[in-house]
Image (cartoon, rainbow, N blue to C red; front, side):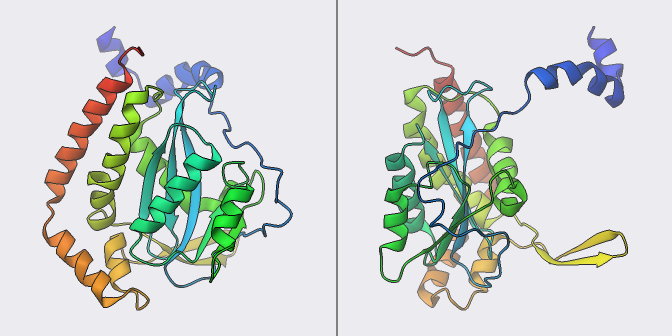
Length: 272
């Protein structure tokens, strides 16, 4: 059986797995928030050319079973620098999401100027609107069009490369994992992703005949883009340079893998 499996072509495996894909196809986890939707403006593309404007989303760690007893990962990406922040959530309550948004804002190397979310109730609520728009100066709050994931292409991409590739599609519902996940998200993974792993940004889209040609800029780490921003203070840049000089990417990866093994062992442990 092992020999037959290893000798199968990709086309054969794809054909054999098709029934399983239909049975276990991904489910939409966004629940539309009806409150305030008319007051929050739509955004379909970004025109800002400075750091501080984030796209937000939540990713279900449900293992294929959506029953609201599983956890979530809150994901945020800065459009200009691709700086990424992730936080674990035991649920999508307004208090849990709002608390992690405050924590993300406190750890950003630049001021928060605007956020853009989907239409889920964890974002479209009075608590978050008051927190963002009730301050002086207010933080711009926009939302994407319903059922249009391309409106939030940057964060949808990060949901795969920064969440699924690291944490997978398994179910996280054991209470013991939450004290372990957020130190990993704030620590080793955050430093590895933002300080050492380069990303590419789309700079131009051009229609050539029937084809749309996309041109990308040079690959840079989010830290390099932050250091190139005039809006970031010299003190913050010096702090970031010193923090990077004290880090080793290989050690960060080993530490991240070690913590993931501990988290996975807790995740599989029977609940008391």
